[in-house]
Length: 421
Image (cartoon, rainbow, N blue to C red; front, side, top):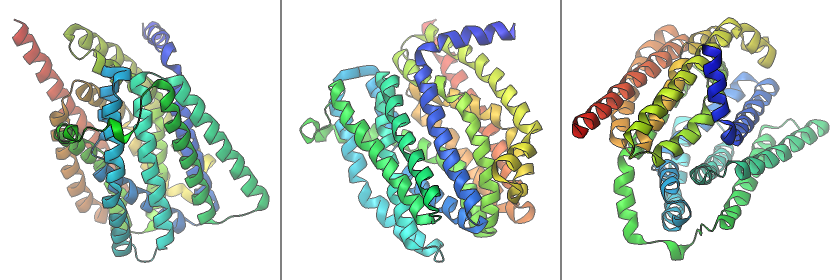
């Protein structure tokens, strides 16, 4: 029974296999990149880098307004007729830099005065460039141009790996050199993807911007923006709390385990990314929505349970093989986090469904409650139990998200049934 379900669902995903390739390429690239940093440099240095990336990503999410999710939904609905909305999305992303970079400088100086400011600036630029890449990626997903997007990111990441090999040959083991190489990679990826948009006749131009539309978009984006920020914050706040309450070495131990745990998302993300585009398109057809949820729910459960079992059983081997015995402190943390794998997959599915249906306020409510719970529990438990507490809180938070998403989705379906009757 289970085998037949898996085969049936994987046949359906053949048309979106390039999403899988893209996600795999991106995940493997960053996984290997940070793995190299972890093995080459001291745990404290690695912890500083992870902390800065986390800080910059949090600030980037605070200022990006959930624009990529909005852009994907609009493009999925309007396809090639979405030049105006896309242009406004790029305009807003560019304008928000005037908030982002001062915040990076102020918080880096105030919170982490021992870390080199030049490192914070470089990482800040990389993260904001990736905001643009995420926006363009969302547009390609909305257009269902998965193949073209994959070829671009694969080629760029291949160039990066060649540069890394060249760096090893020259024995240039300098943190800033590795950060600059990542900056070059993200910049090339952004430029290539941006200019390829014109081949799809979506013009990103000031002439396309209708300033009256900006206010309308901002009103639509507000609940989506808050949901995105809250979701990202509860996903990252533990690293910031550990960096302040304990030290950078424990940040390194926790981030290794958390990175492996989050990498398991590669088994869910391919069909979930395409699923958001599909649910946006099917948002007015109740029967199609119900069928969509049932099909994907079964697949996510099966894959999630298999991944959970593998990561839990082989946690020690995974950590030691990839990162060496230097990170033995990550093993028990990874075992605990593996329990959340199924919750993470289901949350990605149901979150995509809620966003695809335009239920941004509901998503915001769930993520806000989870963020507050996450912060309070981490502040209380981390001083008592260390990074083990952060792992337990992550599992609890993912479960809480699942409960909230399920509640709102069931409520939406119930109301739709009442109206139809």
